[in-house]
Structure formats: structure tokens, C-alpha cells
Length: 395
Image (cartoon, rainbow, N blue to C red; front, side, top):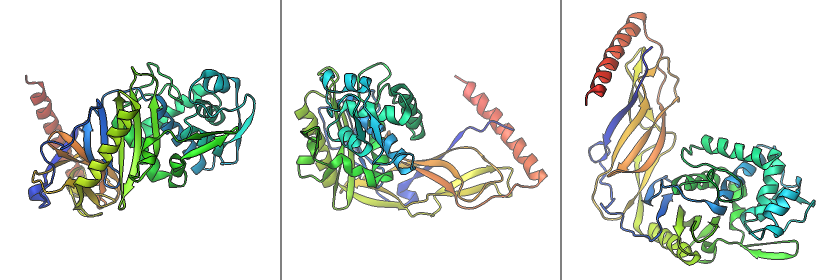
């Protein structure tokens, strides 16, 4: 059996889809922060990015992933909002009042409901709430961290790593703006019943009333969540936020701001710019053939690929640069192939920037071919592999 390489089918959307894409050569926006990304949640289009794949210190924005694991357990019935967890000495001493950081002010050895702990986590940014939730769900903070990194991998995060559930700095705690925005988009789409906690403007616990630390919630721009983070001036100020206007949702993630004021202003300006300057365009309808993938050993040599949902992008108004795209898959695809099988993805770019990635699936089934057909395909693939290896070895 030949080892199948990654294959690409290039699509030029001017000719292929008859669409003049409206991305200007420049992104049309400048930001003072070193790392930022703005994404349209409905289409997954990247509207702006700067250093979006550079490592940053997440600080308390790491609690977004902590919340995701709790939401997952709730959705799967492994936890209930009325379940109670005990506040350990570690949670109290490391993350509570004695530590001097952001805290929910849980009392040592007290018990708190999961729902109250979630509010303490995402509204008050309580380190004690994060540790108590981690210990309650996984048995220990260390076991919870293992789950965090496993979950991050399941969600498609390839660069970010997590060392604790509450934001303490360390060599094992590093994220990118792109991947934190990806977690945020996942939470918003997957857990609408729990996402609302991020938008609550205040929470009182132990007779202490605290306001939500997310500055976007008070700016009248449609913001309804997520989290801020800061350790010290050296680490910079970060924020992952989301807002909706006229049925459109944008997600922003920024890291490395020099102050809380700069963080709030740059996030606000990015969101407002995104809402004002883009319009939605449809590239393909759900189920519409996008392009073929080559099939190995089947009754036919290729199979059309489609998307489960409409493929749309947000484009700046009034510009005239084309989009380019490619279907990326590991192939040829080995027959037999089921209808609806996940095969690669569609990648859409403007210039060198990837603005959209969409999973693809087969439009139909392909049965295994006759023995002569499989033999022919094997010879063809072996020859193609040899040519590829020879060309790859040339300098």
C-alpha cells in the first residue's frame, strides 16, 4: 500500500465561483497590540490578524478552557449545576483571599454549588473557583491540567499548552490569539445554555459584590462575554471577547496590550471596524460540489467533495481583489468510501493569509473496484510516489 501524501486542488474563485472578493491588499486596520485576531463566528472568516500565531501569556483567559471542560461535563450529564464541591486548603491558600489575586473569596473547607463556582470563575475571575472546579471534576489540579491539554488537542489546538486552570505564569502555560478565539467560538456554538454566564455583569458571594472584569460589556457595542487576563506589566494585558450586532457575531482576541485601557480600546475598535466594514458573501451552498478528491482502488477514480453547511465569507465592502482556495486532503482516498465521509478541508486565502477553513465530506459512496482496476491504481500510485520522491530529493 503506498503512503499517501497530502494533496491539494487549487480553486480560483474569480473563475470558479464568479466572485470578486472584497479584501483589500492591506487589512485596513492598525492596532497597537502585538497579537490580535478578529473572526466572524458565523462564517469563521478571519477579518483581521496580527501576530495571531505568536505565543502569549494567557493569564486569566485560560479560564475560558477551564469553563469549557465544566460545560462539557454538564452537557454530558457528568455534573449538575446543583452539585457541590469542597474548597480545599490548596484552593483557598493558592487562589483565595490569602493569595491576594483575583478571588471569589471562598471559605476554607466550605462547599459551593457548581453554578456558583462557574459564576465566580467567569464573572469574578476567581482563582479559587478555578482550582475548586478543577479538583472537584478531576480529583486534583494536576489531573485537570492533563484533561485541559487533551481537550485542547481534541478542539484542534496545535500550539497552545496549559499548565494550570487559573492563569499562573509558567513554561507550560502559553497560548495564541488564534487558538483562544477558536475555543471561544466553540463555547458559543456548543454551549449556548451556559455561555450566558460570561455576560453577567456582577456576582455577589460571601457578601462581596464584584463586577465583571470584561470592559466590553459596558460599551454598548453588543458585547456579551468572555474573559480578560493580566499577570503583570511584563506579561501584558489580554482579552478574548465577543459581540453581536444585527444578527452577526464577531470574536476578538488580543494579547500584549500595555495597559487595561489600551486593551479595552483596541478590542472595542477592532469589533466596531469589523461590524462596519464587512458584508457576507456565499461561496457554496451546503451539499454543492466543490471539487473532486482522487480515489484509490475504486469503481471510479474520484469523488466529489461537499460541505455540510453553506460556505460563506465576510468581505470588505467595495474592493476588488480575488480570493484563492484549495482543497487539502491526504490521498488518494482508499476505496471503499462511504457517502458523507470526512475528507480534508477547504482552505480559502487572501494573499498569504488563511481566512477560512471548512471541513469537507464525500458527496457519494464509492465501492471497491475490480482486481484489475486496483492493480492499475497500485501501479499508477507507485510510479507517482517514485516521481514525487525523486523530485523532492532534487536541490
